[in-house]
Length: 296
Image 1: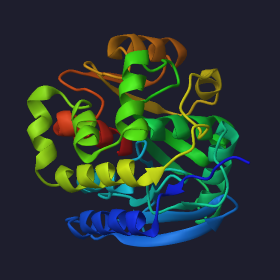
Image 2: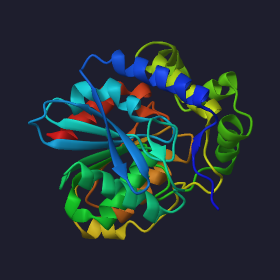
Image 3: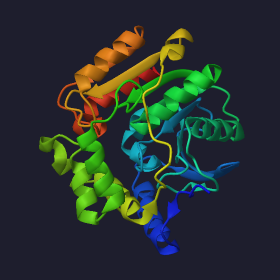
Image 4: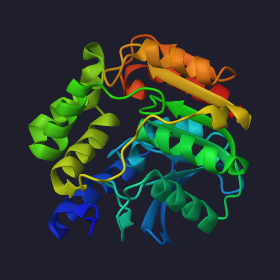
């Protein structure tokens, strides 16, 4: 039987949740927490913004949890009720009850979550693997996604570099230690901006990521982002905005941008100078503007 993603122990989960709670408590915009039940397990949510505003769905990067969106809430929650979803099967407050090993699983889980929340249609934003999940969901349920923003998308049009995959696997799964995992996270940001990772609001988020990497176990067959046919996304006419770092370390940024332009000719595609994978750390003002335009 396939293994289920989970923390190594109750103590490991408690340590992670304390850091998660600290990040939420430090938010300058009030954030509520909630849970919904799905057939794949319990899904945890962070919610911010006026309840009367239209919804916006936010899907985080692999292993970062919904707290990664907290530094962006001044933009995201300006006109929307932001529903930040902890992706099930990853280090977060969501609790999986069965394996998440295929694209159909993650798409089905997200659809169950949105239906439980009575969200019939909304803009959707994803970062890194969250972009991959959002794009696959939009192709499966185009009537439920009004528009789509992909920040530092992974998979979809480009495979990750083999050397990067080896470093990521060693630092996060094979031999995770706090120092090794923190160094790996720093490698996702341009060198000149890494000092931002030891200052708030990102310091707490990085600490939480490190705690998750050392205390959480994802099975080897857990779903991972992969290249896919994006033509259905172009055919259904959903407006798409994409931001890619020129210095992207997972794959070649300019090449990925060119491929997106070919398969999604009507999308807005921004190749962001001076940015690696975690673009909100490298170029926060540019990300703010891209998201403001996307949500206007």
